[in-house]
Image (cartoon, rainbow, N blue to C red; front, side, top):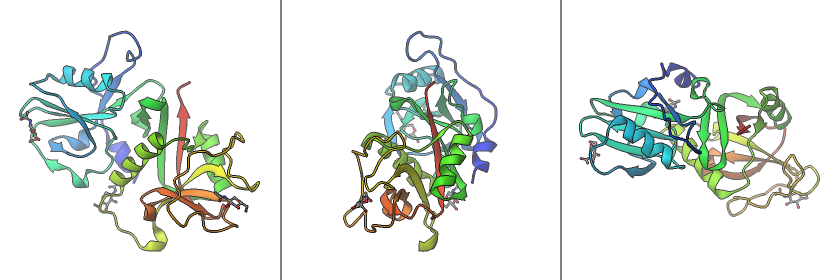
Length: 244
Ligand SMILES: *[C@@H]1O[C@H](CO)[C@@H](O)[C@H](O)[C@H]1NC(C)=O
Ligand SMILES: *[C@@H]1O[C@H](CO)[C@@H](O)[C@H](O)[C@H]1NC(C)=O
Ligand SMILES: *[C@@H]1O[C@H](CO)[C@@H](O)[C@H](O)[C@H]1NC(C)=O
């Protein structure tokens, strides 16, 4: 599944030269979406005809904007709150182009996705299956950390991303994807790796359900809400790093 990230071709980046927090804002054109359009996870449709550069600035100025389509048939700019990863639900639209926002410390060319409101950069690995300890070590080996979800805003953005990624993707129950988060309950209290207590949680009713399941996953079956899981079960991985 990672191949999609690698198909992305050259950067045709409208560069932003304005000063301030947004000075790093750049965009990578993802050619797999040439002549396509996706009308979900919309933040805003810029009114009036826009140039591509104006569209870019519009996205960069909206912290929630992760990507945008520029629809050249009517000079419309549509901002999106996630970076799309699955072309299967795109519709044909001649002349449109799609760009993903990035900053120097978070590069889409190697599969990373920036979430600007929390100054965090993710990478999703859906072709690996690791237990909790190996997942922690895997991310550390990349100078990153296993996903930490301390608030609903960050969790919500990841849920929207994963829903898009798996749209229409049906698998047998036993193979439903799950992603460990970095919290564990090995001490009898759910803690993040820095030993701070887990305050925000999103277990659906009936969860956590097993005393001997000391780890937590975002479970596809629950639309990526929380589920307690054995630490030796195998999961997909989301690594992340914060702005240096
Ligand atoms: C531009 O085209 C898109 C896609 O066909 C459409 O959704 C949008 O409403 C149009 N915008 C304007 C301002 O006409
Ligand atoms: C996208 O969705 C299709 C089905 O709609 C699925 O087969 C595919 O695995 C999904 N993921 C990617 C990365 O294409
Ligand atoms: C953590 O472990 C304790 C003791 O086994 C248990 O009572 C509690 O429900 C667990 N919490 C979670 C979130 O799994």
